[in-house]
Image 1: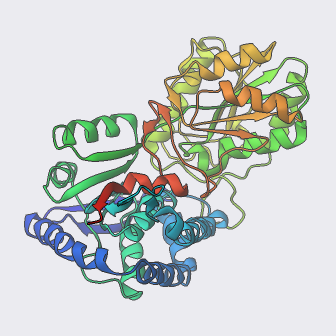
Image 2: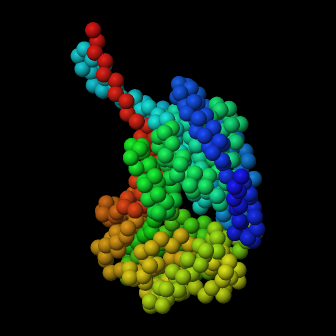
Image 3: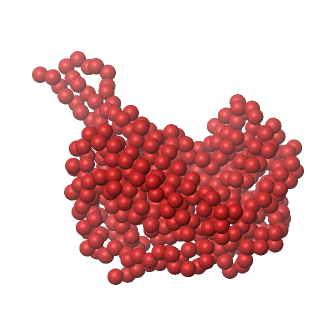
Length: 461
């Protein structure tokens, strides 16, 4: 049986080793999901809510072990990994609470002699493909509402974070979820595509790269099933001349460097009005110098390694190319002794004198690197913010809410923040435009991706 290994970025050792599911296991899992779906759908929503709530309790009860596993699998400092559990709890609880409203039938106005209404019914089996960078926060967005809506779910997690799939399913099993309703599979790329092509799969929820999203679309083409795609980002921020500079800088720098910059909605481009540019740059330098790069199992570390050396090398190359084209690096990497070529440990960096002729301002970086560009006006800032193939989030900093709202209306993004960034409010729809994907998770609207409308047209006789 073919096996895979999870190499920890902490020290390059093997942290997890698992077997890929073989054909028999895959078929058995798919059959169990299909068989279980009708019974799961028939349960009252209150029963499904109760099981999901219990599963959240079981999950949170293991937060220390879960946090340690996240640190070792993908490198986030242990000081922050509990936030993954807290975010899981917040999002799951919100979706459990709004389910009765989100899934309620749509009653139409009275029409003499008729009764008419629309129900939201489950699709069947949902296949969730989750990434390593926020292994629980990305997966929960689709899994919990899918289960609440009456679907069964099969989870395929990244080979970098396989324990996350096992932990999540174990929590639901402990909570008493019926057999076959929520399962996981460790799959090769080829078998992942085969599962998407199986007749029982009625929706694919994918979070990952743009090429990964293209693969999903090719694989399900002609099957007439839905696919939710949360893909990449090159998210911009704009600091206006009337912004609270201290708050803006602290927020953007955290949004750029949290999780070592490995966030689809992390800040990767910063545009600053010329009137406050020098102040913003100086405060940014001071903040970045305060990061402590090192082993993420050290409680004092605030910046861990990237997930693998190849990822760090990509960021190094992107930065070096920009410098060769005229950009200026503001951070002396020697101030971060853990930064070592040939390892995933990479010092944070700020670049100025950047332009959109450089990859660093147009191509997703996914690392601790932020380009800062001076602008003369709101119009110039908006033009540059929208000059991207991506459109996940955008952040605007101004103390004039009316001005901020006018700018937000013009920003090409699924979510526009005012005076904050890099946060998912579960009450709001999480959605991208352009190459950042399609479909929606979270909020009441997210349930619509995991159900289909069914109309009931009754004539009274």
